[in-house]
Image (cartoon, rainbow, N blue to C red):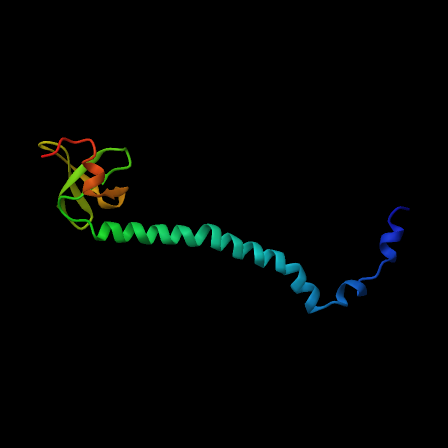
Length: 115
């Protein structure tokens, strides 16, 4: 009894638009993907590229910060690992990819006594 008006409508009205109607329906989805790409994917790729460049430029005597917050000086650089001196005479091996950042001399010596 309630379904009779729905059966009376034709499908011809929906297919009359053809390709234009399909493009109008897909436009928000395409726009959402473009927005997602420019706000999420592209910045993450740029950050990864910058991190890889930082790791490849890593050299001896650089001051680095580890993910745990430990700050140390690089004493040995290998392919996949780095030797980091965290205290005088205490050297630890760290996976190269786990280095968070490289500090400049002025940043690391801010609270140290001038030598």
